[in-house]
Amino acid sequence: MPRFRWSWLFLLFLPACVPQAPPTVSVEQAAPHTLALPAPERKAHLTNLGVLRWHQDGRRGEGLKIAVLDSGFRDYRQFLGKGLPKNVRTRSFRNDRNLEARDSQHGILCAEVLHALAPEAEILFVNWEPDSSQAFLDAVRWATEQGAKVLSCSLIMPSWSDGEGGGDVHRRLAPLLKDVLFFASAGNTAQRHWCGLFAPADAGWHCWRDNEPNNTLTPWGRERVAVELYGPTQCAFELALHDSATNAVVGRAVLQSDATRQAGRAVVRFEPEAGASYHVKVRSLDGLLTRPEAFHLVVLGGSLEHTSNRGSIPFPGDGANVQAVGAVDAEGRRVAYSSCGPNSTLPKPDFAATVPFPSQCRQKPFAGTSAAAPQAAGLAALLWSSRPNWTAHDVLQIMRESAIDLGPTGHDHETGYGLIRLPR
Image (cartoon, rainbow, N blue to C red):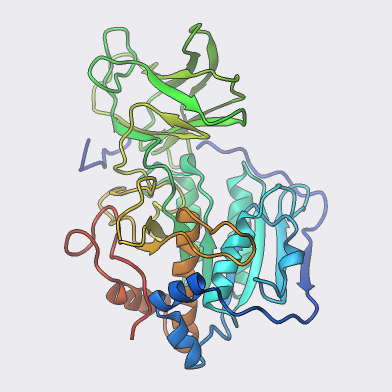
């Protein structure tokens, strides 16, 4: 059994498919175009970050490469030179080699933030096969081999770790991030996450609160919902999903250990019925446990009745080699959905950024912790480009020292080292 590492409370992945054709690499270029001056909201936002002052001094991210790891690049060419740089380098690690396969512009919005902060930095776009951790690692490797010193990822894959920075994917990711800064969104899962000790009732089902074995899940719509259970455990936990009205079983999964033999995951995905709600249930198939076992559970695509925001930062932001960036409002208060630490003895999150970010690529501003991570990445690019001889550690240290402390003095589990800003 793995060593118990949760001092504050007591994956198995399929291999990536062998590519049938070499991955495509391209450099897309736009016709000359002059960007409009920032709207008042954009200008005020950049001023608060300290960015405009640096731009006026001629420090604009030149010589730095930033990679955007995402899945949403649909129709990105129409924004080249219009919110994005005039050219970007791209690569896809999906099985179909299609950078624009998913009907989303999430990655474009992340890149827009980066370009607003570091307009002379080169930006790379890369995606990967959604369920393949190996393809994700290949994407990271490619980005660093292209010379990217700063990586930005605002997607979450909760069960790709044990929820506290461990597991096989983190183990394989760490060597790829030598003298590289990887910024990730802290996640928007604070209100649909649970973690704690397994507490079975007489029937063997875990009790989420008091003697309640059912945790009600309410889908947000008709789109696919995922329920992910994960943790630093090898216990044979069974994750079950029942229709709340009929008690019919909708899906089951048994936790599988990853290659480290110290972490495991179980995932149930389903297509919800209109107006239906569901009961999430967990039990151990190992019989009576002889030691405390803890786990995380998160819902993607719906709400959860019994939740806890502590330790809700998912992969990749829970890792020691990744900087997790949470979201705060204009008053410096954590936005309710922004995920929190602690995720082990390591301090999490690392930073906070103000959201939403005013967009030129659409009328609606870019919100969520998705908008927070690229802001931190953009500031890191400005700092590093102005001091190219610095190490990643040097840049990170200056960012911590420059951050505006929020909440309790020093690092805290809601806003990290504080609100990001450039040094004066």
